[in-house]
Length: 366
Image (cartoon, rainbow, N blue to C red; front, side):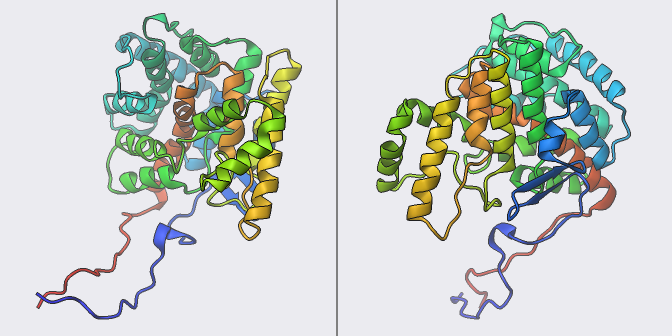
């Protein structure tokens, strides 16, 4: 054996930045303009439809991926399947070392595979909040009513399930349903491209979303706000974090070079919840922290735009809805399951086996 000395001539696209591997009708992200399009509609308009429900948003996203299902059909089937999942999932108290995403991954993996992509997707979407509730609330979880997905989700978690709260959660889930070819969506499409089943593809998405570089940071944003405590303390606290070489949670995004449009949607939703009478104790603090962080980051990293991302106001919105912080990433997954399912269906119709190349840089064969 001898060491390889030949120059590697093939270009390396680490992280696949800028490499197009799919055509999609589900969503589009423009990082320079700060624009997110979901099912042909700007995210702001998509989430602020007066009659928006989880079922309506999910139907639009699934139809964009090629699923032929009406909103009424989807609502009825999700309601039925939540009842099925509830009956099949006994209370499972939390165990040390098992977080909500672990529970969600394991629970989805145990679902029966029918071989019908749409049916398997719907049973996963319906079962996910049941699994989260059984893990979190255990014996105190309330049975689903079967009429509204967001009402049932809040009810099963023991959170207030008023029409106002349910509408706020529906807007949250609609906004996070899809976001281009992010890591978890790509993982789901890779699995789908092999001909594997829908459930396996969705579990792959869960595994990718669990990572702290993808969906695992909303809880720490709330921890940061708790540590700062008051608007006056924002700038000195953040400056100390930057001096210590630590990153500011909820600031910066791989794609966006301006403020994440989803942060703007959530800020509006939180303000609407406040106007309806729901307590939003962290909204003023969050705004002060965002402004202070943006100012400091512009001063210290002038060549690297770092603005509020989706996780920043996710933390404040879910906290307003009285959802515990150790469920934040799982709540993100409950919405994103819809997008993953749509991408699996789209991949089946338009894609091929995803198999990128690599360049061998190991020991050369003599």
